[in-house]
Amino acid sequence: MHAFSYIDGQLHCENVPLQSLAEQYGTPLYVYSGNTILDHYQRLDLALQGLDHEVAYAVKANSNLSVLRLLAQAGAGFDIVSGGELYRVIKAGGDPAHCTFAGVGKTRDEIIYALQQGIYCFNVESAAELAYLNEVAGELGVVAPAAVRVNPNVDAKTHKYISTGKSENKFGIDFDAIEALYDKAAVDWKNVRMRGLQMHIGSQLTSVQPFVEAVKKVKPLAQTLKDKHGIEFWSIGGGIGIVYHDSLASGQLEWWQQKEEKPLTIEEYGAAVVPLLQDLGLKILLEPGRYIVGNAGVLLTRCLYEKKGSAKTFKIVDAGMNDLIRPALYEGHHEIAPLQETVGELVKADVVGPICESGDFFCQDRAMADFQPGDVIALLSAGAYGFVMASNYNTRPLPAEILVDGEKSTLVRKRQTLDDVLAGEL
Ligand code: LLP
Image 1 (tube, rainbow, N blue to C red):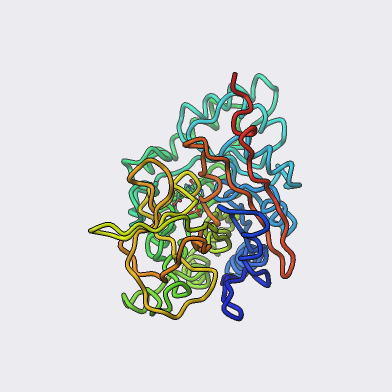
Image 2: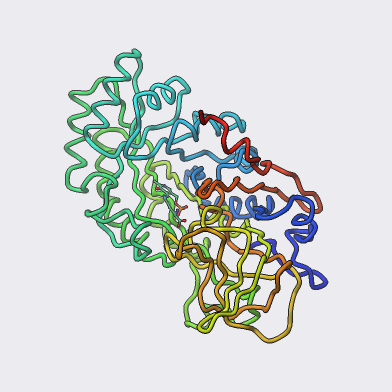
């Protein structure tokens, strides 16, 4: 579900008209629906009923403190990938004892900080990292909880930049080498305790089949590690895809109806994986990011100019690839919805930003409502990997962020000023 819909011809987030937010806070502006975030979290929790489980929200998808606070209060754990993300989680009231620390390149400082804070587990991605974790924990006189990320060599069938579970990806350790590493850790590394096993095959998976394949493939290994080394959890990662092609904007058939495809639903995901995991007796962790926040956010941007060339029409808006990089980096699709519902003919145009790069577009040759300079549009499904990937490229201040709850909207991050952007430079 998501909470962006037209009420009396005006696009709303929950009960707040987005036009009023654009006027009050300016554009570009990220707006999140708090109730959509909670609904997704709860639906996932429900879909995993029958399993001893924990949802460790992947902080990287959207790390605004208010979003983290919402999820912490709902009972979520957190999957972090840096000392900075751990710092955020703690600031937001999250419990380090429910944090897993992922990533291929943890630094000494990050390891020390996470050990001091008492995180639940380090998800380790190489033998060298496990040895180093043992060394640093030894210096501190503590035992570090660890899990190894297994690379199951399964094709996630997603964009090559967000596919992680194949042998040629930099992530995890080859399936065949895992058991020997746990054996070695038990004998040689007294300052690590192997607490679990982890995997993650990629992001934005739109079919349940690769998840099932990976779970089936790794399950015997999880069983062996439990029997032999007493591991207590298995994290099966994140990656649950969302629907980016939404009929809201175009009024046309939903894309899966056109393509005779169906999106992956969380209920379908649960129904497929829960029965496979039930008899293991391990705690199952999930690390969803996009599923929780992706469709809970939009990026509002105002049209500045229209340019009709001989080959194309360009609608130039005030957000750029520095604010939302997904189209440029992954050919990501974001629906475009004008804030005022329109019923007229669609026009074919490119929506482009002000950045001096040809890759600075939000869509190309797409049929859309014929919005005009001055009008504000929403780029949908921008709640995940939107603001968090924004940069100051072209010395553009980072946008503001708003969190909506029913009729109420709260500024949860101020728009950067130019002095904020330059702070720290000499
Ligand atoms: N766990 C691990 C170890 C991960 O690397 C990731 C995402 C997740 C969980 C969460 O995946 P999710 O449930 O959100 O798919 N910037 C890209 C996505 C990068 C994903 C990186 N890892 C995008 O905008 O599509």
